[in-house]
Amino acid sequence: MGSNKSHWENVFATKNPNEVSWTQKHPKTSMDYLESLNLSKTANIIDIGGGDSNLVDALLEKGYVNVWVLDISEFALERAKKRLGDKANFVHWIVSDITEFKSEVAFDFWHDRAVFHFLTEQESIDKYLAIINNAITDNGNFLLGTFSENGPLKCSGLEIKQYSESTMKQTFSENFEAVKCFTENHKTPFDTVQNFQFCGFKKKSK
Image (cartoon, rainbow, N blue to C red):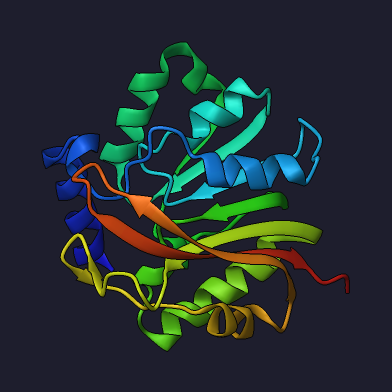
């Protein structure tokens, strides 16, 4: 996985937010979904592959106090910390490859619109499934966004794996119930459009 890390460190070291396709000024879809869950402000929330995304700002603004941001790129997280200033002290920052993440915390909400579709090998997908199964509380929530079957085949020069609603549901069906699935067009800073498949899941009670 080392080459993956150097790839992302390089991306974040050499490109500004307006030069990468995934930048969103305001993560409306993710925040609307989260707010619809009516979680307590003390819920444990993690953004997987959060990089220097603005989701963490939106979460802090809404008063959530237990926020984690995980990314493989230390540079990306440093940039987010710098942007947040003193507020960065209220966030737990984790530099890790998702397939090597060992969580000591049980999360009530897991958010990923950045990482999962980069896992193209079954072995990595299985690792992700095992990690998320352990890391989410019973009845905990999970919002996943990946490129849809009408979306790009590559991102940032790397191959990705596309998902449809049914393949996404199937992938997580053992331990998660799909609550709401939808597609969405994401407008990139370059005025191109990428079609995303989203599914919100709830963990099945044991």
